[in-house]
Length: 518
Image 1: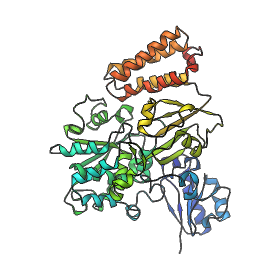
Image 2: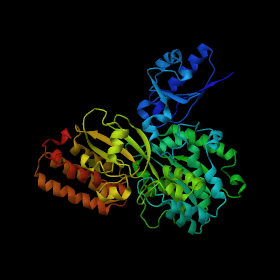
Image 3: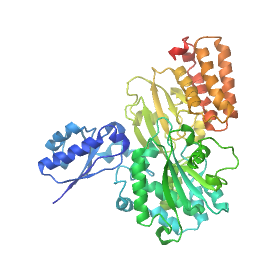
Image 4: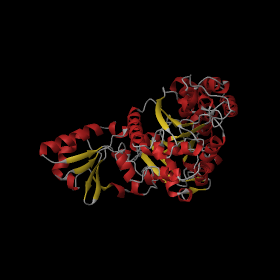
């Protein structure tokens, strides 16, 4: 009997809007009609406003329908959706939807296409080609490929990955570690989660290659506790890779070992900072370490450690498979390759967009995002998480490029973009940045621990009209102290949203109001 294959995502974003109920409704309706179907649970394509997005494999390709609710399933069957026929939710071939078609999907090449927990699917879609290429090279050659590709850390700091790897390779030690920072805590970010839930093998492959390149034999994925679905997907993929010989004491018969395990965090934002993460991994309180020594020299349990985030490791397999030049051909300036951009907030078409560096904010907001969901003018966007600068409309033509953003006092960070329309109170947003820092500070250094609390108080006085010029000068001085005196980026970057709001939206600070109104 011929089975019609139907793809229904089990990504957390799709599940949150009813994908599980849709899958069950399709199975039940097919059984009621005596129709043979095969339901494959894939990752989301990233077109989040269309979730749950159901895809049916037809002679003309994969035809999409969405957003589908369980109650609409009988009408889909009635309309002949198993043959890709018209319906109110009919989207046509998913890969022809402009939002998806006009991307450069390298890291996310398989996400939404394959069954993420099937090693067979992964291998059939170019999986583990990068690892096989790496096994044929000396460690120095692997590091050289990563260095030559121009890959920089996608977690926010944008430090060249190859330099970290070369440092760890050059240190002699009885044990080395590979640690993946999967504590994705920035506002408006979910690309790490999408990879882990939608293509976990690519992360495992990237970390294994890092182990081969540096002599590390053990790896840890430090996963935020809010990602239970990612944990299930990762552990299923690790078990499958181990059983097939892609992980273990003898990786693909190379006599080189690499083992991997998942460790769950406890919800502290500060543990996204690499040294605080290491403290947590060791079972200690998540507090920032002094540097030096760098983690590449003395990291986890005092041993040399490579720490990169999910997207950084997930970018490595394609570099090893296609070559450094192939990857380097994407991007601009010193920002090479692609970046998964996450559009969130007050935006009509929120979702994930993987583009080569160089695309502008205006293109992302309007060509992809379709403008604000409210229909009102977009007044500001925050790029790079809760510590990113607020960018006004006058900066929307800035290309997505690490150096271009730094030149205007902003940062690309993890690629999260949160959109605000003209109803936003930017003074309240500035105060929120200080409050966030106060709540999430590990407490180790004074500028962050005390400065953020004093910052809230100063903003409250400023907004209450208590000698406003003096309060603004005091606030700017405090921001300078935090910027240059904090031990890590939490306190050091909190001034970015505060000062950018002061500079670009001064009128919002000039409206007298009580602290409670904030």
